[in-house]
Image 1 (spheres, protein in one colour):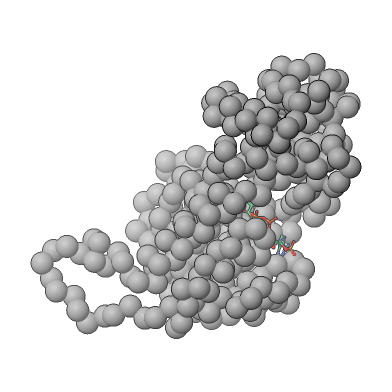
Image 2 (cartoon, helix red, strand yellow; image 1 turned 90 degrees about the horizontal axis):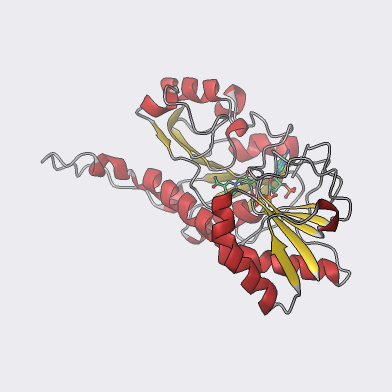
Length: 310
Ligand code: NAP
């Protein structure tokens, strides 16, 4: 019998309970799934940072903490966490992010707002959208999400540059890495998508200096994490016209305070951290497969590098 503790918000327990039980049963695993196992009896924890477990010290026999979230910045630095931490990589989460990023990129690329907000009897037929191939896009972060978004945009014809910490090769994309690669990646980009993790090394990746590298009138799309951008620099770049619009899904403080300048800014679109989410049916199967892999002596997939912070 494997004891799995579920530690997330009560609403998540209602969403995940049946999916997890089904996934364990389908995998032929004998699992006791509960929200209240004695800490020293817990083998694995299915975890979200907003759940009851914040001190991992009593979980002396726990072999892995399986996060329901892709972003682990709120738990990776927890001093009581000595067990392996595994982040969520889920095809459904990825698919949702691809759809959100492609949708918002196309909105800006096609200039949709002119017509959506311009239903006033004026026949505006002088400007045609350019083709995707004329609009360079840069994706900061070439992980599970950034790579999939880059590939989808490449398929539509956008010239896509991706940037990561280590060297990467992705079919159809220009791949750059490291501090030196960032300048080349951003220079003359017309759309920038941030899909980096929130770590000390990625804070303010988009700042006054790096925003100045973009093509004048570029679009910024941030579904990554709030600290990746310097908010004052983004507001100043909007003011000067260096960037034409910022579509922001994530913020340093969430919910974004109602008096934050982003809400009222005509060239900022705020979405409330809904770009994508983990889906219980697919995520449960991934968690079951990862626990089973560990039970049979293999390494966990997608284990967090505690030093790198993601
Ligand atoms: P991932 O697979 O861990 O990929 C992270 C990417 O960022 C990797 O390519 C990594 O480089 C790169 N990177 C990390 N630190 C870097 C640095 N200092 N310089 C350059 N590149 C760096 O993560 P993911 O699953 O794609 O998710 C990315 C982020 O999306 C998550 O951390 C989370 O914050 C966010 N997210 C948001 C939502 C939402 O709804 N808004 C939903 C899910 C996730 P290497 O490839 O060299 O390691």
